[in-house]
Length: 334
Image 1 (cartoon, rainbow, N blue to C red):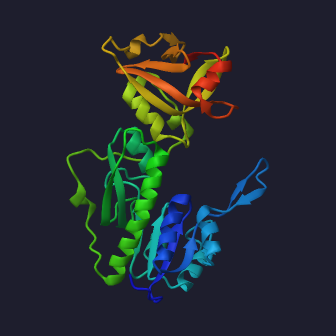
Image 2 (image 1 turned 120 degrees about the vertical axis):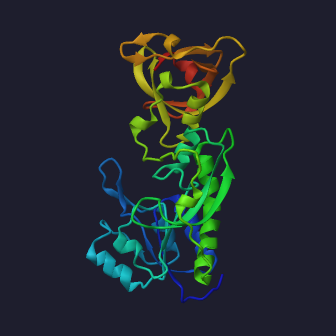
Image 3 (image 1 turned 180 degrees about the horizontal axis):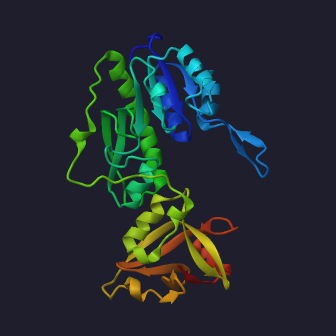
């Protein structure tokens, strides 16, 4: 890449995932003239402490001007953006931009997406790829347009998902791989060699899967709907954050338990439990068949047993299941 300071870039992002891309741009000598990130977040018991985003902290360390608009259509923000005279804008894990923002630079605005578009359009592509049991994912750079994640694709790279990868593992792999793809994309655009392809050219016979934002209710393990493998994928797809959870009876009291890590115990050939046989019903609750074997806690599901290996009861610390079972009797799970 040329080290010319004439090619002016504005970078937009918020979490740690975006910091690596910004870091690599600076290491490559790119002229990042400004950073746009989310407003500081109020934290603490009384919400009286403001916490800057990881991208803001990094940008300030590097002496890059930071803009933190409450509203992206605010005229004061747009004036500041225009004053920076960007040739190109780069978006990595930020938010949906209005046309007045993404159409501003003459070279356009491109986004880094943590999936192989057109699959997994939406806010949580890493989580949903794992939840759905995929063995491969990837990253895509594409020019923004009016719809979410539908723009013309510039570059795309694939990466495997290992059977024991959790969301954090895949996040970290794609964070590093994605930063390199951002640099490659900038090189192509700066040299005039970028070729953008309509997403229709990437369509296959496979149905498109969405990647909507994940909420607490999304994370509840509905045992009756799962096989051993699908429950395992669900747990690792949400680990370590926001974490899958289930309701349990612990020492005679109903409470919630997060499950961060599980392992597969395939059927040994004996008949596997089916949903209608899972411990009956507790009112309207689907009760899963639970079995304690030594210091292990197993849930019986079609295909075998799921061993719950690392958990956290509400109000307690995250811990290995063996530690929890020393002082806690888990008598039911649903």
